[in-house]
Image (tube, rainbow, N blue to C red):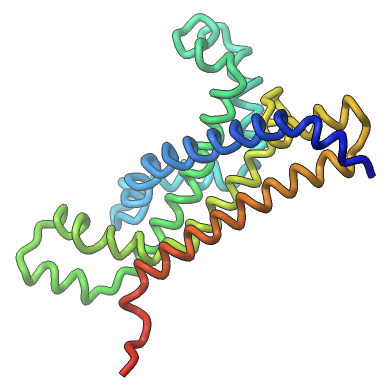
Length: 230
């Protein structure tokens, strides 16, 4: 094994890691903003209100992320109307296509997490809020959503990790992310073990960081659930 090649190409890996972190963080933020209203609407008791959000969630959870990314990056470009529109300024760039695909994909999974946790909200909490004269909007803002976010935290932590791992697909559409950097090193020096195990090491380090941050958040937000010591 020749890890000298890896040391010499460490700046390339660090640049790829920075691109990966950009894609993951921005897509998670955008996806969360999309997922909150989607999750609330999909949890509504009215069938016609929940129909379109549930359809969106079903389509994006039911198809592979790679297919979604290819449809956005390769598929939309075949339509002349898209190429002549202002949207083509964004859609012709691989970076933005990956970002859109990642955002929509994580939005669907996060919305399903939110929908499930909203449905699990204890009825007693809602009844107490109603008895205090809270409007439905105030109930959602002060009771349902805070309780939902606390209970959704462990599942959302898994979604963040899955998004990090799924971001490796960006290297397939010419983006030099962490996985793309490993591909370049392997193609130049033919060291598949060293190049990809280095990428795996960086992914592992970021995963440990994410797990630690979510554990700290759970310890803080779930402190009231721990038994008090006498």
